[in-house]
Length: 359
Image (cartoon, rainbow, N blue to C red; front, side):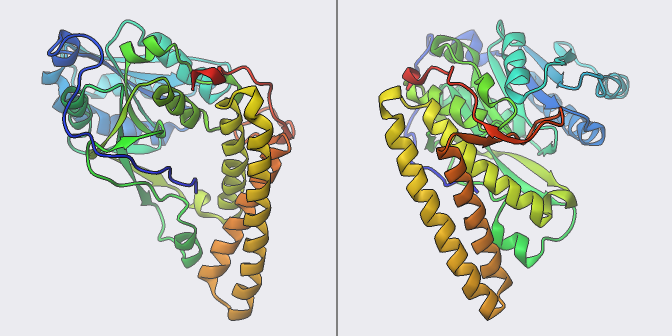
């Protein structure tokens, strides 16, 4: 749903940026694999089962591996799942399954807690709780980091649908994810499959923006700030995870709300990444783009209705939702997708506290 940024050249060879070549951190890293979760016990069990295999494969490459579950539920609903996993999985020397309770709601709050937990480690890997890791996943992330010695490595995510997508769903491409050669340089990435070099992250002085905790887009801003600070993010095609897509996320209302939110939050991310003197221009550009996107989508919807094309209708509805989202974001409003308190989800955008000059 988010427009893909342009690709840059593939990294031709490794080029060390931090520390000496062949340092202990590169050859024998201490790794934290972090998963944020909120009331998804069955999803978390499935992920932990796959992580047990991933950790077993990567164990010989690492000095220590910690699987960290960050429970963002005030009622600690995932603690018993972690306890169950400890009892049923094989334990290895240097491998730990840790539980961290972060009751303050918000994605950024939980991600920053993981950063703090991994402060004295070498690598921090994020994977979402609705994913399943594939064979060799963690090995590929670690070896790609060792090969290119860059600040971050992003892996591929492919959808795994619980029910066959309808024609409307297929046209939306709501869960389409990029695929490209290993070593391709990226300007940003999601955190559903992402390795971060802790030393590089610390040197850049970055944290996830609390302003986006209940909105989303915090990972886009974080990785944009990382690359904007002069660090490099590379792609690893072989580090594959499967994103399990339930039927509820294929409903028309959910998909269009997500398109709307992504359109709005994309504007906020750009504003947070832009110095104050350029923000009026950014708002104007997104407002014009939103008007064009919504208007062209509406016109295409009429054509789709006349031709009875479900495919064209779906594409048109997606454009309208995304365009209206961009207009909303340009006007200073946001859709708080992760709001839990029952407050209105559409309200004024938060104040600007992130360091735009990091870019």
